[in-house]
Length: 557
Image 1 (cartoon, one colour):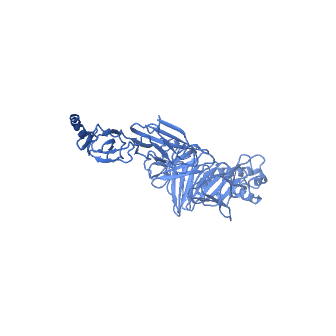
Image 2 (cartoon, one colour):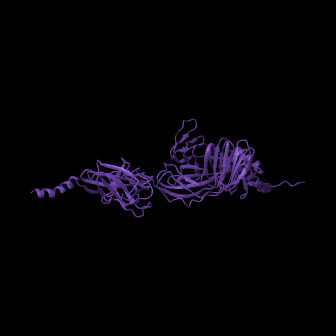
Image 3 (cartoon, one colour):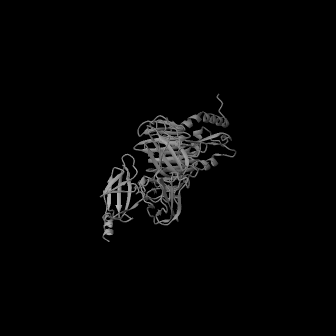
């Protein structure tokens, strides 16, 4: 007659069966996400003093579940079967949980929170997110969510996210989170909870992404879901199949289709060329291309606060871009390449300082690449009502390593040179200082040229009724403008003529004082400065006739 197994032997058998089922249980988590929640298990090691009553009160929803636990684990009715050290398998759906809430740690741009059966309201840092709540972000909005176990999620622009479930197991700190991402993007960093019964699930119209501790991105648009795993492992699953995505791999899935195969993510771009400090916005810096990339995405994340996305730009060429409203401060920039299938690669990250406020005033005169011919040039820029003072610099090189002029305390939007500038190329720039923001960055260097003065006329030659002027020859293609005036200010020139030669023959002017000046007219450039003016005396022609009469007058006497 077959001996009946003792309670202890039945317990040991249950443990052996439990050990045999362990790999299958892991597979249930990975592959059985669409089946009943009972396939997800929590494993508890029996301790001294445990019995059906205290186990039920701590772990199970009520006493009615204990018989089901016995059947599930294949143990008898005797409490003695619960030997210390053995493992008890408990389906998650039967376990006692405590409702939890998430916190909206920070927001940027338009973010709306809609409570269950409520109307949308502007979300703000510190608000609670509870199951049933819907979070929406505008085209430039983002939000950071903080969970009780320290996990975090970053919701991108143009997203709709509903929190379906957020609980904590009473037996452990294991956290159970489930979201519905109706559209948009979410990046999650989940604390490891493999042995605590925790899980983090994101459902989209096309598939479900489930993890127990990892960093990954999920995007959903037009019935298509994209998943990129940065750390750990993600199971991307729907009714047609499952794709496991290890670190550095991603996949797409279309609604109603089997998840695509895992593909390697593109490597992180190299950001060594980026400056440490940015003073002008929007930022546009070319970086080395990543082989095979069809686009590049740049995100600026605030280091202060919870880390919302403050700028998010994409480029078809290898450039780092920013918006023009990026606030001053220290930012963490993240740049990644995008492959031909739209999968976004690994992030290249570094810190960068933005110091672009107050914005510099607009330079007005002299214009960029212009000519300055005034003897005492005046530099002008746009006036600001917020200005406490202006800072002006003039230099012979665009790097302003050795400024020729440094005027840091100007109260008018202009600076006038006290001395003439020698011929050459110069650069000038101006900055604004306000009470609220201090001194901001300088404007872009404005290049201008002070050309050589025009030629100086030689002594004129008067021959009868003609006056001939000569000066040094110019370069090929240059012309000359000649002016003659009775007043030194040339307010009403008596003569104003153009010539292609370095000489000009004029009708003999009327007697008296005459001022002459010449300037060069080079091709495709503004007229150059006037050369040094010359003063000449035009004698009266009647004096010659009078001198002939002098001898006759002496004879008559």
